[in-house]
View 1 (cartoon, rainbow, N blue to C red):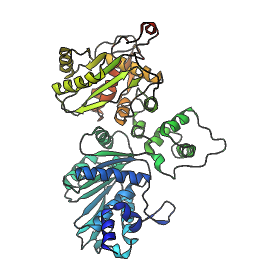
View 2 (cartoon, rainbow, N blue to C red; view 1 turned 30 degrees about the vertical axis):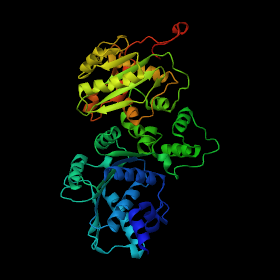
View 3 (cartoon, helix red, strand yellow; view 1 turned 90 degrees about the horizontal axis):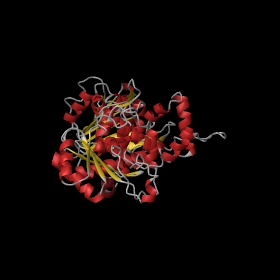
View 4 (cartoon, rainbow, N blue to C red; view 1 turned 180 degrees about the vertical axis):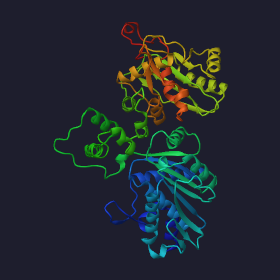
Length: 497
């Protein structure tokens, strides 16, 4: 083997994998590892992060059996078997998974060309040592709180993290075991399992909080997830909307329906958890009492309003935050169209004022509705002093329509929901906004007035503050007169505008 080929094998995983590694596929056949769409996407995302930051910190949210564990183990095997001094540690959620993953790694070794097998000095049920390279590959099962402590490794893979017991303790230990230096990698992958630590990490990664990136892989990227539909197979309304929303084929829809009926007793929320088409859908089963429906939000994100909104008032909604975990969200809406949301984190009061002012100078709004809780009062005051058309909004104050709503926040969310249901309307295709929209639950008081779950209660459940959806809801807080020609004013609906 020439030095040039050896160098390419060491430096290019996509060149190395199909030539050096073999896997046992779902039919039991031994085949070369040709990366599928999901694996290639994950590889591209991780390599991009590695190139820009020098290290990998990635969370993979995916459906069942899409080959992501296979990819991460192959990546780690490549690094430990082709380089000196590399230690990989893999932590799974149960013993049988630990065994299966280690068997996969052993297959990489046993089925590779003999000339490419490094000398082993130790091999048992959970460790493979490459003695001359001083590299090793170790697997363990999440259970004991001590797992992960006392380790030193460069590469870590957490498998099915959402199902770990003692996940906080494990992740804290892993954080100490993997140095925060170039060349190190931590990859946490899982299907969803409710609103837990893994969900919080996914939400933080979406928002750019911390070092992790979120890599989401929808179920329909897996080519085997399709079946020939029966002659009488017809999509109902929900199925047709789902297929259009995610650009899913009739064969994939036939597979989805059969899988749901066969394995999940017809429960599509359960299917969505195990085989998500979006990040929000992965966690829908645990947030089924959300006031805004995920379907209406995703429909608005998939809609392109072509009718001109000229003449409708331009309204900005500002949900300010300072130095905590919450972010400042700025929404802009003109009629039936909401522009992309702007988010800023850990900004002081005057910094927030400056950011809003810059955006307002470009957008020329007719109103800027500011949540005046906390630092929002100072933000609103200063913007008013600068001459901007500010409306101070207190989420907890009495609703304008106090027969239907208890507080202003409930009223704003109610008007937001009416706007969504009065299609067509357009929201930006934004996973953070999508998650924020469906996080709040709702109930009614004894007078049958709507009550939306408060931010405090949402955060007490360990969930991020829904800043983006609150910013959009703020655009419905005040009745703004439209900038339309006189002949059109009599038919203008302020709620739609």
